[in-house]
Image (cartoon, rainbow, N blue to C red; front, top):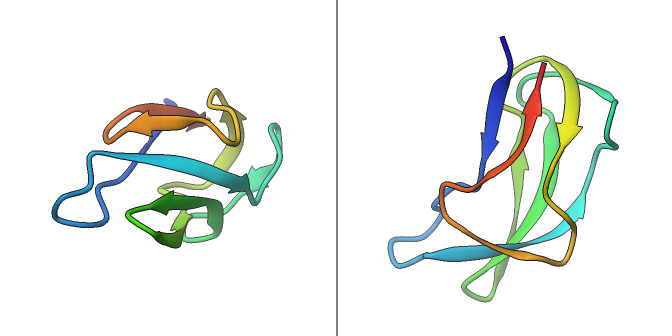
Length: 76
């Protein structure tokens, strides 16, 4: 079963964030805890880790802004 990759809420007032860079490519094998993408929000940049181990399927584009909780991709 696929695990959703959600845009996390990093700060108390965070409502949205921008994907600065995917650190793994679509179709890559990723391991739980591995840095997956860089997230820019509230004047800071954070690395977000993979929530599971498996094959990465990216559905969100770099440079786009998304609301907290948006599905950015899946790990199958």
